[in-house]
Image (cartoon, rainbow, N blue to C red; front, side, top):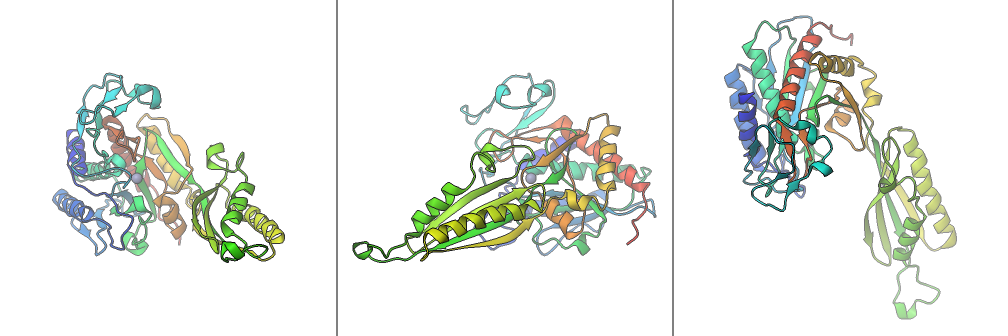
Length: 413
Ligand SMILES: [Zn+2]
């Protein structure tokens, strides 16, 4: 556990904040720096092929000792969220946590409150790690990175534990939606994968939204307002009408939860002549996305009918798909993860994500990839924290998972 904590504390000190507004890959130099540190460590552990590829992605193999076993992969992302600073992270270790509110020492206005934080009270007596309140901690996803390196170290130190080959993959720029942009599945070369990018002990995420993006372009007629009588068609007003006709008491993120779908306008821009609205379409049932698009087309048709000189066009693009639809093709991915969690004495908690993960995209690309817990909480906020014992359980889950997969055979192609 000391090694796990030591690794985690070292990784969070490297600034790897992802940057949205850049073409560079990875988007920040710190990700390359952390990647170099990780390659060195993996080589020292005996993962002889450890390397950083030309995109900065780290790849390595824990050699297998069971010839018939399929190759699995463990993934975590090295970048952290741009929603809070990741510079000069000063991790604070709260040993034997007293179960009370945690006041962060660098900014006393930042308090992790028991009343507002589900599950925190239950961690009484455990080791909690936070930032000092002035930055992110970066447990998302350095807890995942530390867990994977520690599991690799354990397997290398215990060569008798049966396992097939295990690919270790550390990716870049997950937090700005480019986590899989440079991933080559041939290079990963595994038949199933797990992202270590989840929360509380036992959490297993095997379902995400299916997602499309609709862009509504409203074209009006612009003319000097002094000459506008009977001629002007103001696209801004039509955009307002469009939005007011969208369902809000249902089918909106602010009025729904759980497995309910939604439509979410999140960008509005324009002038008199033309306005654009960007709308997220989200449902756990992929075919329902078409129904959502129909709602938008219906609104567009009524507005065009009422304003014959206006044009309302809707363009729908695919974003990602519910990973559950792809995981059914390799049912062992979730089944064995569930068994591994049970084996360490933890109750599996199946979670659906009202969003996407790298795993949704990877599953769609052909690599079934559910997401596993690694002990991070309150991510994307300076109130982020990690629980060392949960990270340890995550390591043990991976060791069990390696052994369960060692008993399996390669799926016929
Ligand atoms: Zn993450």
